[in-house]
Image 1 (tube, rainbow, N blue to C red):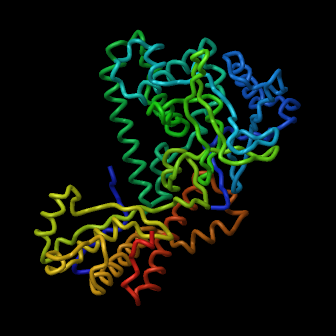
Image 2 (image 1 turned 30 degrees about the horizontal axis):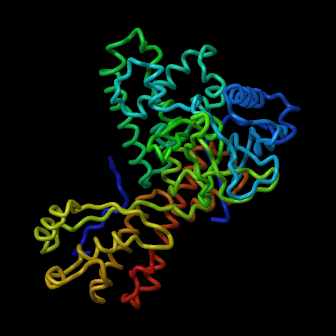
Image 3 (image 1 turned 90 degrees about the vertical axis):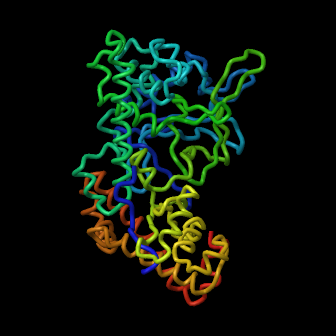
Length: 464
C-alpha cells in the first residue's frame, strides 16, 4: 500500500473447557484410591508433601472429623489432556458444590518476598520480589534434606522437565521460524541474563560466604525463574506474588474463574491462602484454576504448553506508518506527541479486531481532510475503511509469508498421528503453535474479504 508499510509479525520484539499445565515427570500413577496401592516415586513424594502440609497446620484429612467434613480433594500424580502428559493435578474425592472453600494453605509454608527477607537477611529490603523468591528457592534447593521446604521442592519439576519457550535452544527455536514467539522468548531470556548479571554484581558476589558461586549459578537462576513464571500466584488483596504449596498443583482451564486469595482467622489471627471453586465438581473430576486470559504464545513462553481450545488465543501483528506517505512527517509528529510511535504491535484474534488496531490504521491511511476533521475511533468514510481493510489483509499476508511452511503442511503433520507421536514434545508444541497463529491470520483475511463489500459496518465496535 502507498499509505502504510506492512511489516508483518515482530522479529526483534524486546473453548468446551480445556486444561493444560506445566510438564512434569511422566508417571503411570492413577488418582484416587490406587494412590496408596502403588508406591511409585511420584506417589511417595505426593504423600510426603501432604504429610508435611498437615504437620504445618493444613487440613487435609481423608476422614470427616468433629464438625468438619473430609478434605474434598486428592493428588493425582498424572493427568493428561489433548494427548499430552499434564503432570500432577488435584481431583475431587467427593462431590464439590459451587463456592465451597477447597483448601486453606497456612502462610507458614508460603514462599514470599517477606519470607525470603526473613530467611536471608543479606538480601536488600528493596529487592525485587521475583529475585527475592528466586534466591530463596536456590538456597533451599541447595540445602537438600536440611531445607524446611524439602517436601515441596521434591514435587517441583526438575530442570529437564521444565520446557517453557524461553529455555529452548536456538535449534529448537528454528521450529518456530516466522512466529512472534521467537522474539518474545529471546527478549525474556535476555532480560533474565541481564537480571542475573546485576544480582551477581550487587547481591551475590559481595557476600560469597552466603551466596557461593557454585550454588548461585545461571542454571539455578534460570530454573528458579522458570518455577516462578509457571507457578507463582498473585495474592490480589496484598498485591504480591507467592509460591503456594499444594495450590500450584491445580491445572489450567481458561474458562475457570476459581478465586484464590488470603484470609485471616478472626480468633487466632493466623493467615491462610484460600481457594473457592467457581463451579460444582463430581467425584473424581479434576479441579481447575485459570492462569489468566493468556494466548497460546504466552502459555508456551512461560509454562511450556499450549491448548487448541483457547478463547484468548491471539497472534501479535506489527504495522507501521509508511515513510512513503506524503503526510508522513505530520502523522509522525502527532504519533510521537501521543507517545505511540510510528510502529505498533497489536494482538490479532480469530473472531474480532482490536479497536486500537483499527483506529491506528484509520489514522495511518487518512488523507489530509480526514486528518483535519476525523475521529479515528469511529467510521469515517467508505474509502478510508476500505483502505484499512486492504492494509490489514496485506499485513496478514506478509505475516503468513514469513513462515517456511504452510498451515496445510502443519495440518498434514498433525493428521498423521503415528508420525506426530514420534516427534519430541517441543516439536509437537511448535507445530501446533505455528498452526494456531496461521489459522488466526487466515481467518482474519477471510473475514475481511467476506465483509469488505459493506465497509460501513466492517470495523464497528460490535466486532469486538
